[in-house]
Length: 401
Ligand SMILES: *[C@@H]1O[C@H](CO)[C@@H](O)[C@H](O)[C@H]1NC(C)=O
Ligand SMILES: *[C@@H]1O[C@H](CO)[C@@H](O)[C@H](O)[C@H]1NC(C)=O
Image (cartoon, rainbow, N blue to C red):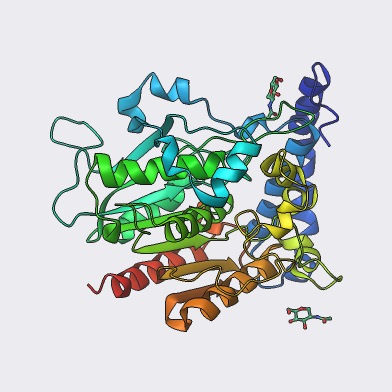
């Protein structure tokens, strides 16, 4: 991994990938020309080609470095009005409690101020971050990106497709959404930075900002996260439930889009597990199987924490006593693609929440022909439009409107 991370190899490798595209592209079209040649007969030619392009992008990151998918908050902060930029204050250290405080001590993590971005309605004078109106609801967004990359910024990739999609479909419910850029993690061969629980503490700062600084009732907050952001949504919600911080009860509901529930890959037991079976139809294999994110999150914690600690892998099959992990969880929508690498873990996650909270607590929607995190990909139709309608309907039930 990362063999071409230094210059000039890095520049050479990027050049190679770029100039290979005009050759690869017609080749991909050719080998996908007939439905029978595609990973799924039901897939369109476009989807069969797009999966190869996305795979190439992800794979390149693991050959060079993961910097392409990083966003510099200081650059965004220069034009706050363009991207709804705000700084979010760090939570006071005493709000970091229990098991998480223990991990923070081992990994030397303290709360810091973090960037966030507003989507949707501004005040009359064009400002963002105004106080909540009476009974106003808000969508709190935690982006994906394997904990090494991605951003919630509205001028980026992926998250805007999700957030603008939900806001457009749920106009009567949300006037705005707030996306947080929590600290990203890295590890060898790069500098060791921000292992667990850095992102969780930041997600808590963002939640507290909405509740205490802006006056949103937790009962009016829906936390939505895709991929690693779905993982973070689970961790934040479990943390709020288990610590019972004064004034910070859990949110009204959560939306988990292709959540990464098993960083330890404990479901990969045979050739027919989703990780192997879906090799041709999904793109996160190196993110999970390469183990880079798992190591970056673990930091100085004991290496077995990645499969024994429910904050790190809430669906791990190696957790000794999974019953009760999700006690008190709010209504939760889990979106899964039927062709995802991490499908098995999402099914375990669903079953665990159902065991603790009942079937009515979970809406599990598996879209048969879909790949990972497809709401983030505007071209992934018709599933994307369908899922946005499904989420809208479910939110209507959850808020009884
Ligand atoms: C990003 O690139 C810089 C310069 O090449 C390097 O120092 C840093 O470690 C990289 N970080 C990651 C996470 O790839
Ligand atoms: C592989 O797993 C899938 C999903 O559980 C199942 O539908 C399929 O029949 C299995 N295939 C084999 C060969 O066991």
